[in-house]
Length: 602
Image (cartoon, rainbow, N blue to C red; front, side):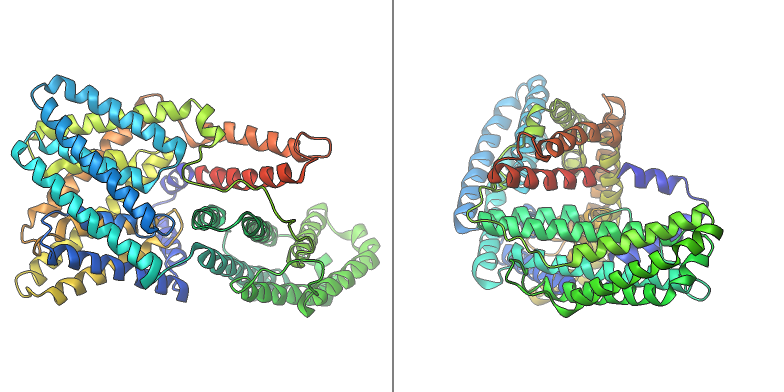
């Protein structure tokens, strides 16, 4: 994240516009899965907004909670929804009591908020509570903020907030379990197939350039992101939704296979982009073309197979495309051995090294596309990934404590700034400070930028809706249509990588809070005050994370890299985890999750 910010700042004038256009074109490229998923999310959000209005819940948090929860985690079971509602009721009730008690002693409110936010953030980071924690923190902080301006209304605010929570959680439970379930396992398999499809396209483009560089355009630089974090998040969701240990191991193996293929295509592209002589490749051009075409066909076959099933086991016969790729590589290897004495006498060292890198990538891809012959034994003792299981790295790493304290400091500073301005509408300062504070400065800065962009677009959309829709239409269907359109745009934008997804989510959240309520909003100053609050909160986060014990992405990688090396050594023959099958599977699962964390940080 930090690297992307530095990269943009180092570009020549107007060059960053071209990079931004290329980034958005890549991230927002349409696909049937993305269009369908966005339609589902927008439908849930629009129906939730309609119920909030129909039930006369005069509080924007109901729609905010529905939109913030949609797609934020595993599907919500009735038991989970009930437990979260009980927790929400207890948090709201205790917040009202605490806020009224501390209202008479303001000098105690600030240290209390600091301790409360720091402690809850620490627990949420270790136990990976995610969205449920945030949805408890947000209304609690708003109550502590509003008690200064309207102390008589905080009880009604808590009541309407709980009413909105009932609607939000109820809608999610209905859709997730009966009306329109969206299982993470199916989404993961579709995502694996889509990832291979993109890699196959990039492989064809790079190969075409290598074999015909005089006429073919050069392939683009490999994207600085990976699908591995997204796939691991979906695997966590699938495990939380009830996937057993054996299926977990199968999916984890498929994720690792796809990640290796994507990484090898990236290396392949880098080698292809090198400008070297064409003498060596011209000697084996027919064999190279046959091998490249065979591998591309095998990748396409794998992309079509993954969304439906994962083939494994020694009894599964290899498909024709895999046999063809292996035979083509054997023919290429024989031809290379035949012409090696010829090109070693005349070719430069750079050309030979580039050709060897090209051949190695082809061989690696051929090995990766072969069917999985080893079926995971049953039963496996792979630890189920749960949002309630702490990670050893988070427990022992003192950076989590520093991060939690800095989040508390950000919220307190935002709280003081908001009270100083004497504007009740600026409660978004503390919410922004809470939502944009991330463990490293680079990650926080990246999220701040995305939040500001999303808030500006969402605020502008709300202004247009207030000016155009509210004065001319006052029916519920029109209101739902407006919500659906904005939520669809927000959902589609959020179904991208971490480089831009938060901006899409923030677009919908901003619009929901500004435009939703008992009736469509008519106050044009609401979006302006919210945008100003977001800017102030973002400034506070940037200032705190830059000045108070700053931690950069490069520094936070070191403990994770050390743990990755220790786990790798434990898996080598003679290592502590190399003797028992259960320990091997456990270490493999931990390593994949750790690599996903490293990619997120980088």
